Image 1: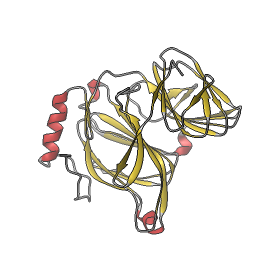
Image 2: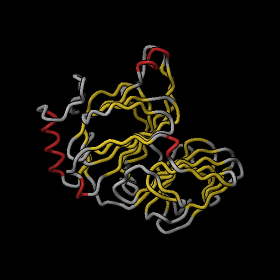
Image 3: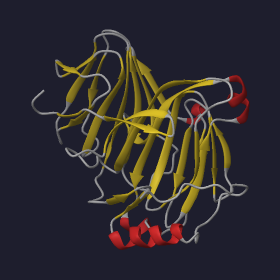
Length: 286
């Protein structure tokens, strides 16, 4: 696969949840506005346990949480308190300052649960980095879909394949969930300048070359490629218009490193919007 950049993600552990992270990498820092891509691997939580990511800050980005299995409770410093189910889009825009928590709902902590999904970060246009924070929740049945010839496309965010998601993206964006039956094929058009495919499950070919499972294939700009399913497969396609280089430190993203330093100091001295009802917080890394 000479024209395609392959990224083999590194494995990480986030408070007990195993993830694969292809972005950012040494090979590729971003794809369109996407600067961070976490695949939360399938994980069974026994009764009495669950994911619990405590109060932490963000600037300069939007977070997109999209689950395949399980549920999460999202709470933020805007007062949002939202149950996120499979197929929903939880979209939080940080702007100049927001804090949030994400945890397994209390009912599932009692019974035990299984979690599998994605959390993606999208950089904000420079003019919006210091804007107001916001939150929106889009239920699964509000997302546009196309089903034809064994190809099921769900437009999670942005636009593509003659579909447009209601998720309020601030710049040209593509995020689509693709499911293909064995023998089906899909032409990946050049609607967006930058694009990347991530194979979650199954076996697939990209222009007759095998697509390694759970790896990201960054597609060449301006070239049409064909995705073919060897068996039933599940993929995510992301892309859009690049926004220029971004600095990243911990949970902070900015075009100006001074904004990151300011955010560090504010969080350190507890000068930050707080999530109602939350007292514990995650401190800055050493």
